[in-house]
Amino acid sequence: MPSLQDQLLKAGMVDKGTAQRIKKEKHKKAKKAPKGQPQSSEAQQLVEKARLEKLEKDREINRQQQLASEQKAIEAQMRQLVEAHRLDRANGEISYQFSHGKSIKKIYVDDKQQLLLTRGRVGIVSVDDQYELVPAVVAEKIAQRDQSKLVLLNDPDQAKVDDGDPYADYQIPDDLMW
Image (cartoon, rainbow, N blue to C red; front, side):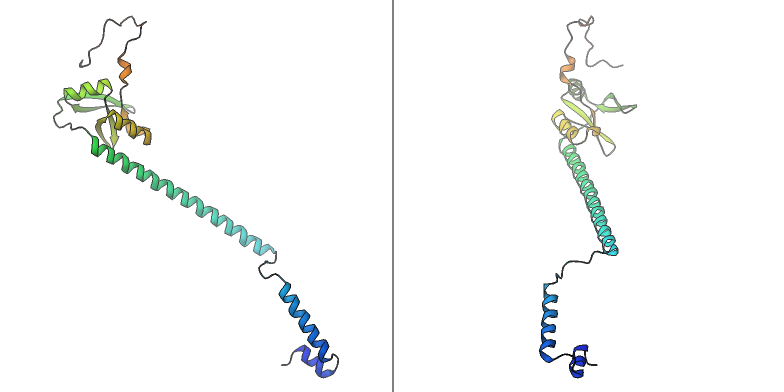
C-alpha cells in the first residue's frame, strides 16, 4: 500500500520538491526530539516510585546482613580469644561463687586462681554457655566487643581502704569461705 505522500504526488496535489522538503523537515524534527526523556505519565511515575522503594528495601536488607556478619565475626574473635588464653581449671578444688544475672553460679578453681580472681588479675567470661577464666587484659578485650560476655572482673583498686571506714582495721581475708 503506497504512503500518503505517494498518493498526494499521484493525485497532483503536491509536487516532488515540496514532498522532499516536508520529508526533510519531518526527519529533522525526529532528530531534534530527545530520545531518552520519558513521557511524564502517572504509570511511569508509579513504576519509578516502586523501583525506588525496592532499591531502599534492598539497601536495608544488605545493611542488616552486613550487621549480622559483623556480629558473627565478633563472636568468632571472642571465642578465639578465650580458647587461646583460658586458664586450666582441671585441678580446681575450691568452689568460687559469683553472680551472673539473677542467679549465683559456682566454678571450681585452685587456690592460686582464687587469689588472682579476688585481686582482679583474672576474670570470668561466658562463651557458648560455659564459664572460663581468662587474664584481665583478655577479659577487657572481650568486654569491649560485648559487655554481656564479661561475667566477673574484680577491680584491683577495690581492695584499698577508705580513710573514713570504721572497719578499716578489720580486713576480710581473701581466702574466707562462707
